[in-house]
Length: 347
Image (tube, one colour):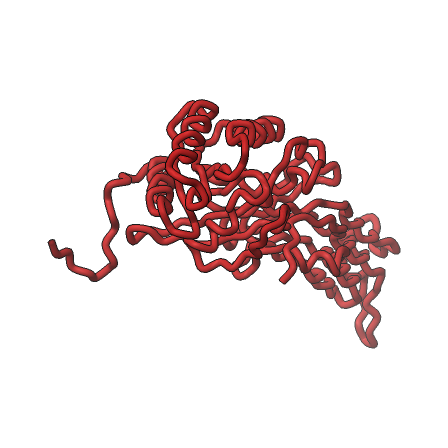
């Protein structure tokens, strides 16, 4: 399935049904009078967060959604039924924005959440509504009110607890493939990853969701390379794992490029907890490892981890470091390993 994280759609709620002008005329009935019913209300437009979706691809092929018009009123005081609603089904993590792309209407993060985007127009009154002692035969009825219409943006921000950032070919996809069951494309050329990938990591009987974001390069915030549009997917992450390619000639400069792009993007990404790791250490000898770890540690202002996704060296340590930050953010004790329900503890 193709990944699509942004779509612009047109929505329109239903118009209200018109009221009826009708009079009761029956043989042997002396007093008839007005009996026109009211029109039905127009249908609403809703958006609902559902399970089983992880992309907005459905909205690539259909961009217009219109609710039904309310049924018109009829004689014998018969009111028209309400028009049918339209429900836009979206995955968890979807933001609904106004046409300007900035004004937030709703942020759906939990399965089952529903928000009404456009209310249907009210139905018009039939002539039975206007009868009075001084106007016993009204010959007017109201038309239904028009529904609302507008363009909106759907923007998906994946819900993951940890995110991978780094330059192209820093080993992010390889790391994701080695610690989860995800199968991202892996190759020895830049920009292999063209859209975010998700995987579930299991470590120490615990699980968390890890997101692999397409690589950034200098100037990404200005649209260079793939740009920074995919950074929105790490806005919800609790912690970032910043991978720096150990085969880079200048690992300190590579680290500073990504930090500069995170700061330029904003949205608090540069303030998120960050774990720095030197990747591909299996391609380095002991002397090169020590030199590059020292240079990276000086640039980052902290001691970086060293790992190799190919040999699995240092991978478990990195995962446990991520889990500690995630547990701290959740307010849980990182030293407690939950037992399986029904499983009795044994030393």
